[in-house]
Amino acid sequence: MVFFAASLLIAACALQSATALTLDTPGNAFADGALNVSWTTVKGDPAFTLILESAEPVDVATGIKPETLNTTVTLGQVAPGLYRLQAVEADDIENLLSTSGAFQVFSDEADCGPATVTVTLTPPVTVAGATATATATATATPAATQTALAVKGGQGKGRKHGFKFGREAN
Image (cartoon, rainbow, N blue to C red):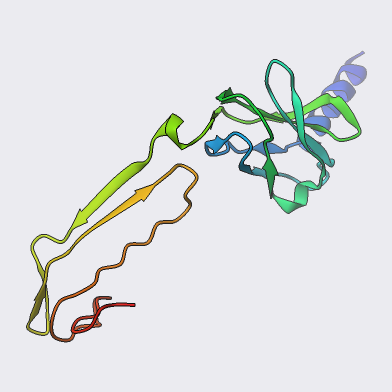
């Protein structure tokens, strides 16, 4: 009897460690937009399907190989709201491997509103005797992955700090 119980415990531990796929929480997304999904895995995790949890669950990707560690999926026409992703075994969708944290799906930019950031150099930057003051404004949406600000103008020289003085920066 003790041998049988020990065998069950060892089998349960082996099964749990064999499927260690863990979905990361995706960033917010727009309906009918792209959603970047990433995860961690261990050797031996099976191929899986991603399901968008909702009143009517939707397969958003199938046959995913866990060793790729990420994928981008198109959400399709989903209603705005709070969602989670489920990873289920590709050959056995009843076998839940992992569930992500919650993320928001917005209908469009008006749902979440743009964010405006203003950067002002205070005090003015002085390089090689030339003084420059600048204000830059950028507007970003949640879908933006990168925003670059350019500072133009000024007089004199001074490339050391990333500013181009004397002519307009390109």
